[in-house]
Amino acid sequence: MKVAITGNIGSGKTEVIKFLIGLKFKCISSDKIIADLYKDSLTRKIILHKLNIPNDDFKKKIIERLLDNNFDRELKKIIYPYLYAKKKTIAPKHQAWRPTFYEIPLLFEEKLSKDFDLTIFIKADTSKRKKRVLARGVEKQYFDLMNRKQLNQVQKELLSDHTITNNSSVLNLRLNIIKLLSKI
Image 1 (spheres, rainbow, N blue to C red):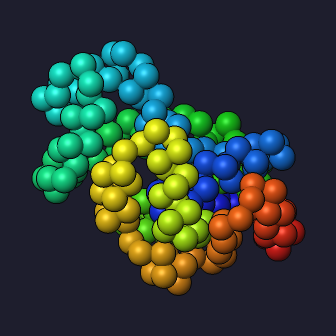
Image 2: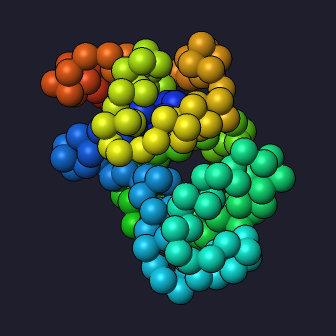
């Protein structure tokens, strides 16, 4: 069974994945794969060359240009093939494990939900999400930009099979995950 975990920026998707990995579930994180792409100097060089962005301070330059929808589409055209290729190399390793969890931040925005047997939405108040993101050292403008690019939480909750609300402690989130796991 393929289970998608989605949620808006700062909702706690990464924390859910970390906990599931600790419980020995197999998990594939889109955010981690993309971060690893940029860590690989050759891959980063190819991506930045295609985007016409210099290597120095590239993250900041990409964020600045994300306001432009054409650039956003171009970035996705370049990044997504790498992302999908990496997922394909990882996924077969997990076929014996059921379920396999996939962290997909833009699950509904990119119309990917049909590829999964079940969807779990991680929901949190906007103020809590913003506080979490800012605590990671991310600028407010980035949070606001990414929050605008995502469907609102009401829509995502309606489209999901299950919702976990994450407005409290990590312990409470973990308890809610365990409750949900007993249902699936």
